[in-house]
Image (cartoon, rainbow, N blue to C red):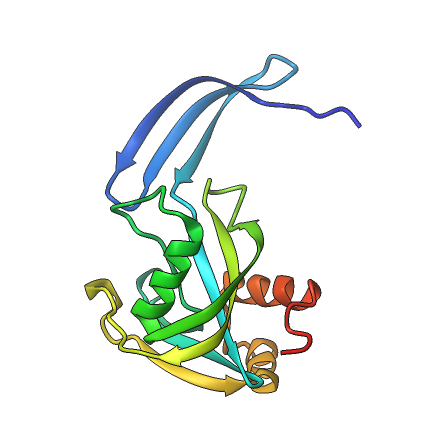
Length: 184
């Protein structure tokens, strides 16, 4: 199968803040046809599935774009250090949002969030051998709560639509399909 690549012939940043940039590229297709492609440029983030004794730890926080509180795995990025080591970031986000410290952090893989819309991807980690410490959420995470649920209840929350975060669902699926939960 021939791979058809689209060339960038021009680019401009339409908007930028500390979290993201909106980029508009002038493009050229293999046929010579020209067009414009706009996308959000954001650094990768991490998502962590904290798991112990058949339970997962979840966070719930208000997500402004959808105007709702969402239940999800701990996740995030460090805007001040977008090139941070993903494992170091995973350890930090887990502790920051839940207070949990993982004795073992297993890398499951890298996924893209929305490749037709954004450059952003995410690194998936499974955290085990958990010890409770003190949580320290960012000011943007005001009102963040944590909960611990049986894995069966977590799966039911996905099916019922309580959990709608695609990165949480994808991270769990990747971890489960790789067999990382077996023998835990």
